[in-house]
Amino acid sequence: MWSNHLKDREVNYTRFVIDELNIIPWARPIINSFNDGGGFISENMPIMFELRFAYELYKAGFSAQYEYNANQGNSTIDFKIETKNINWLIELVSIKTSNAAKRAIKKVGENKYQQILSSEYLDKQTEEDEMITAIQKIGEKVYQKNKGVIKFPLTQPNICQMILVDARGYLDNGGDKYDYMQMSWGKNGIPPECIHYSRTKEGTMEYIKGIFEESCPIDSSKYVRERIHYLGFVCENKFTTSEIKESAFYFYNHNLMSADDAKIAFESFPLKKENA
Image 1: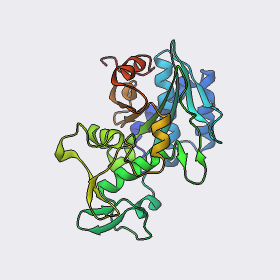
Image 2: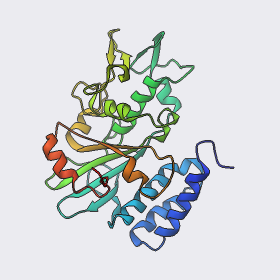
Image 3: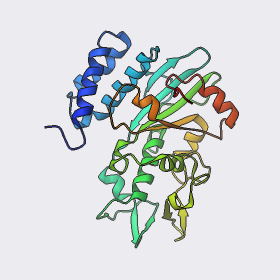
């Protein structure tokens, strides 16, 4: 029996994907990582996501370099994909809630939480906690307090850098586009009833800042703002071919690109939606 979070349809589709990718040389290292990690176990879900992403690249007619070394920090980037005009460096991250992340949000009253570290435990993880935790996890793919910048270099001509989030672990159902928008941009453009708030150190209630905002209090935000061109979010449910491509939401970094420039660059993205 699979774990409660590892569904039969995910296992069946990923098994199909592995069979298809077995003959693709650049995908073999991903399959090896999957096998070395124990195969079809819940702990391997992030690598299973990598496999399905690689399969969509393959079906779209692209190849990739896996675990690309961009000579920044001591970590590699999951995928380097060359297109006609732009090289894409894409890191995948699967959102899971840890006990440490739960302890990082302090409850100070009914429906009020502090966006600061605390040694106190929560009895229950809230939606606001989950959003802050997700933003932290995204930022850790660029910068970690004890290690510094770990993988993405400063921006370079004709290179786009992206973090693609496997959001299934967020709220146990992936949330919605307004959650992803707030994680990226903050409250701008979001209906008032869909905005999430938390309590600050000063005791005031403020909306949770997006990681691309200069006012975001998370340490890694500065480095994300200066290095990451796009954030993508996807929540698979059906586990079918092209689901990642067709269901993902993407948000550009306004600190690095204008809306027009972001639209032009995204035309070269390998998994751009057909109707985008």
